Length: 145
Image 1 (cartoon, one colour):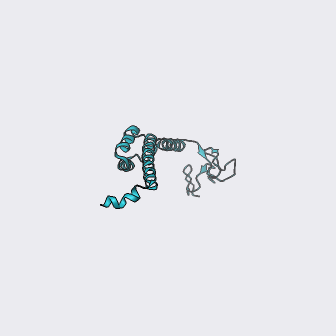
Image 2 (cartoon, one colour; image 1 turned 90 degrees about the horizontal axis):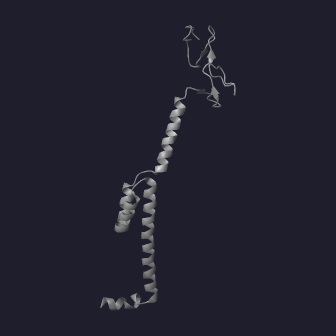
Image 3 (cartoon, rainbow, N blue to C red; image 1 turned 30 degrees about the vertical axis):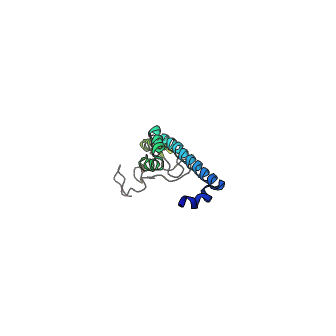
């Protein structure tokens, strides 16, 4: 009896076309999820085939599980971050000093930067050795500044 009531709606060509289009859309979204999962897992260094198969068999639920357990960053980003850290560590480990104003190389005993004339150190009034700007006593001759 209820099937007879819905027969004019379900039997119409527009309803059948809409149903087929919705099914086609669902299949396309499902295939897109599989492709996206494979590509994302591959870029993140996970088992791409495994996660694509999980999404293939478990559909949306498998995709949600992948989103929860996937690695937090791409391998390329992790590699770039590691290179950045190594570069900064190498810069910090360098014994060469640089001017804080123009970042050009200066020597340890320079009183001013030869490039931008920024005052780097002060000289001791007694022994004329270069001193850091914050020092209040000369460590070479014990003169108070």
